[in-house]
Image (cartoon, rainbow, N blue to C red; front, top):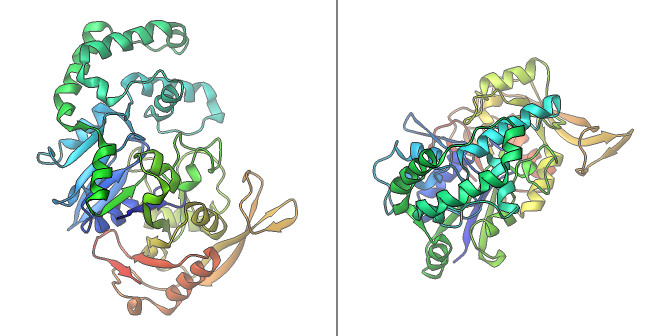
Length: 415
């Protein structure tokens, strides 16, 4: 048995939550491989909105086991708060004992460093994700399994504070004393201990037993630490290969890879965005798409579909097919553009360079359509919308296997 994978193809916020939620109804286990509570998956079921940040989207399948893998940086406060919106999750949710902790001081460091950078800030969510991953790589981080011995973990964190006192002082960050810290860690332990487990063995056993497994990540390919628009990227590997290290799998364990893309493009925070539209069309995309960050509430930057970036991401992830999200947001546009190439130093290229700062988009225009919202079959789509989708397949060299025409789980077309 292989583990199927869902991966974001753009700058995140592609709508992975809806697809994972829909597919998760057919899977025995849903696993989150990387990122932290800077991610946000919004799912609509029967008119009810769920916003997930750490808990895998399979939580809405009463039969699925949900795994938070070792590649995730876990905020105890965030996961505890998120768990409160559900009935008992014991036996249904498991957290890797090797997942690194994202503690309150990580967010303070994140915010202080962003402030110091001024207009050169990355545009992080300020949730402590980068500092938590930095501590992991520096081998000075703390893992979820250490919560089981709160006294020992408290001593280790206090020692870390002492060793880095100069840094905390420069950043003007106040660290908690022993009594306050221990009380916090004990609270974390009481609420999270039943969920902490060796999840790598759990996933292996599930594969060996023939269980159906679905893997999901956070953010998108263009935010990958190695292959994204560096330095305006996240701190983890968001591509399909990252799912292996983030859960303890090997490449041979991966089955079908589905890339999630919007029918247009958005980006949160700073960094290059070649197809961004600064005019009325960009504003309209944001309004019709309700483009505000699930985690931060920040307005997303909006623009046209970038076929060059999508083709790059699809190849990088080994996508078998694409799920095209939010097609209905394009309803009512007279003209719809697609970036089909870049112009750089007077030369037109059809590949993605390492530096996108100086590229200009080369567009192809398509005729718009009146309405796709709520369509549930290929035949219900207007001819112009079908032509647009077929063009995306050609331009990205990847088949479109699924189309979303509203936030509702049922408004989805399978091809």
